[in-house]
Each structure stands twice: as structure tokens, then as C-alpha cells.
Image 1 (cartoon, rainbow, N blue to C red):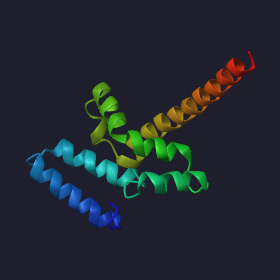
Image 2: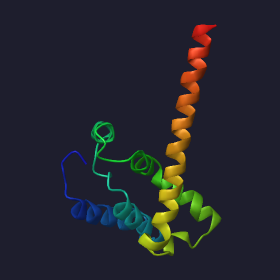
Image 3: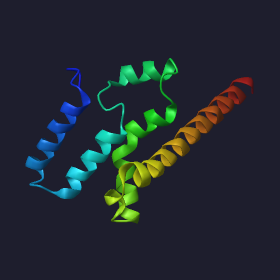
Length: 124
């Protein structure tokens, strides 16, 4: 990723690597296809993502999606085995984005609660 490969080339390499590793498993190939189309941060390092987030270039849900996309897909597929075969942008993206937005809000709430608890302990 640090080589700065263009996303289409990286996507092609990932797909070829997955075909070889999983001997043509359509599910594995489909998951890679989903991730390469929906994770706009897949070629970024953690430091680049932090910088983009801090600069307001990306939203927190995008960073959450990037960090959790494989787990999210796995969770949804465990509920519905056909999940990964839906239309990537019409069916899959809204579900994953919604989960990422929820997680981003929950992370903010937890952080605020932790700060308030720490302040309360310090003031006691």
C-alpha cells in the first residue's frame, strides 16, 4: 500500500491473489470486490487516515468502515448468506455505511462518557 499503487491496479492484484489463494472461491473474490469498491481508504496508512480525519477531509464513519469492513461483511453474511451477492452500491453500501455511522456515534459517546468519568474522579 505504501508503494502508492493506483486503486484499480491494487484491486486487480488483490483479486488475482485471492483467486490463487482460495482456488477460485467466488465468495472470497466477491468480498474483495466489495471492499475495493467501498473502502476508499484501503490504500492509505493509519497515519494518513488520522491526518485526513483530523483535517476534516473524511468523516469518522469512513475511517470506521475502513477499520471494520471485513467484520461488518462477515456479520451481515451470518444473518443473510446472500448479502454479498446484492448490488454493491444499492444493497450492500447502505447497510455497511449505516453500521459504520452507528459505530462512529457510539465511539464518540463512549469517549465523552470516559472523559466525564475521569473528570468526576479528578474532582472528587
